[in-house]
Image (tube, rainbow, N blue to C red; front, side, top):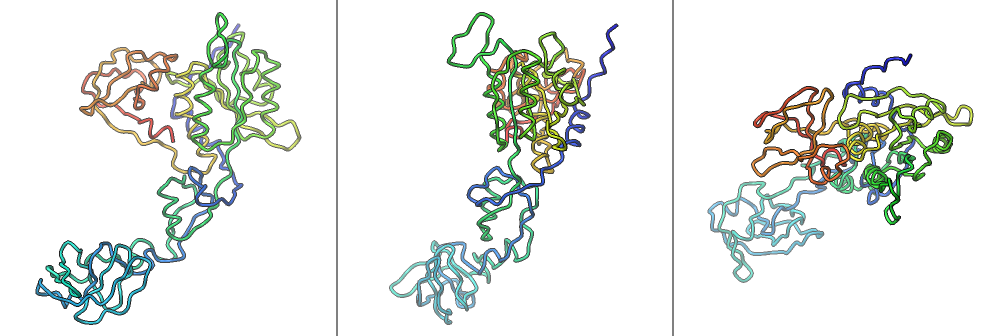
Amino acid sequence: MTAPRPPMLPVADALALLLAAAQPLTEHEIVPTLSANGRVLALAQSSQLDVPPMDNTQMDGYAVRSADCSDGAARLRVAQRIPAGHVGQPLLPGTAARIFTGALIPDGADAVVMQEQCTADGDDVIVAHAPASGEWIRRRGEDIRAGDDILPAGTRLRAQELGLAASVGLATLPVVRKVKVAVFFTGDELAMPGEVLKPGAIYNSNRFTLRGLLENLGCEITDYGIVPDTLVATRDTLRRAAQEHDLIITSGGVSVGEEDHIKPAVESEGRLTMWQIAVKPGKPLAFGEVDRAAQNQGKAFFLGLPGNPVSSFVTFLLFVRPFILRLQGVNSVTPQAYALRAGFTWPKPDRRNEFLRARINADGSVALFPNQGSGVLTSTVWGDGLIDNPAGQAIAPGDIVRFIPFTELLN
C-alpha cells in the first residue's frame, strides 16, 4: 500500500525553511570599487573624510559678502576668478569672485549669487539680488562627516553605492566571494537551439532562463548541460557537482513519475528536507543537501525546480533568488510589493497560492495575461510582474491585489 503524501508546504513556510538553512558565506575578497557592481559588501564601510571636504558653490555665479549686497543693486569689483579645482584668495570687502560650480568658497565670502542675477560691467559686476548668508553654498560635511558609517555589511552594491564609496575615496571594497552554482537539466526530450528537433523533442529554454537569472545574481556558474534521464547519470552528476559548489540547481525530473530520477538520486547522495509546495505554478520544488565524497568536506545545497518553463522561472524568483541572496549575506531579501486595483476577473482560484503573470495598465490597474498555463513562457515577457493571490481567493474587477514587479524580482 502506497504511503500517503505529506501535505504541501505553504509558500511562507517553505521560504522560511530555505532562509533558515542558508548560512551566509564567510569568505570574502578585495576588488576594485570600479568592478564591484552587483557584489555584496562583506564588511561595513565608514568614511575617513568630510563630504564635501570644504565649503563649495552649488552654482555658477559670484561669491560675495552678503553685507555688501544688502541693497539688492550692489556694484562690486571682480577681484578674482575661481574655477573648480582651484583655491581662491581671501575675498576683500567691496569685491566679488567669479566662481564656477564645485569651486571652493574663498575666505571672507558667505554667499553665492547665481549668474542670472548678475550683470558684468567691465571689471565690475552689478548684483541685482540681496543674498542671505549661506545662499547656494554647500557646507563642508553636510553630506557625510568623517567617521560616519556609510555602507553596512550585506549591502548589495548598485551604481549609487559605488558612487558613494568613491565619494569618500574608497578605491577597493571587501565583497563576499561569488556563490558557486552548478546547474544541469534532465529530460531526454530536451534539445539545444540550433539542433534539428526530433519527434517529441523540445528546445531547452530553461537552460537559458536559469543561467540568465543566476548571472543577474553574480553567481559563478558551472553548466553540466543536459543529463541523460537515468538514475545512474543523475547520481553521477550530483556527486561531481557537489565537490566544488555551494549550490546545485536542476530543472525537470522532480515529479514522481517513473522517469523522474531527481528525488531518488538526491536521497541516495544526501537528503531531501522539502518536497512539494502549495504554489501555482511550481508545486514540485525540492530542497535538500548532497554530501561531498571526501570525508568531512561538508555538503552542497540542492534545489530542484520544475521542468515547465514558467514554473521554473517563478519558483526561481520566489525561492532560489532569496536563498542565494541570503548565502551572499544580504539581510533584506523580500521584494517590494504594491497594492493595485484589479482590471480583470479571476472567478476560479486554485487551492494553492497562485502567482499570476500580469502587467500594469495605463490607468494604474493590472491586467492578466489570458493564458496562465505553466508552459506559456510568453506570459513572462508580456508581463510586468506577478500577482500574489492567496489560495482560494477569487478576484473581481476593482479588488485590490498584491503585485510584485519583475524589477524587484530580477535583480
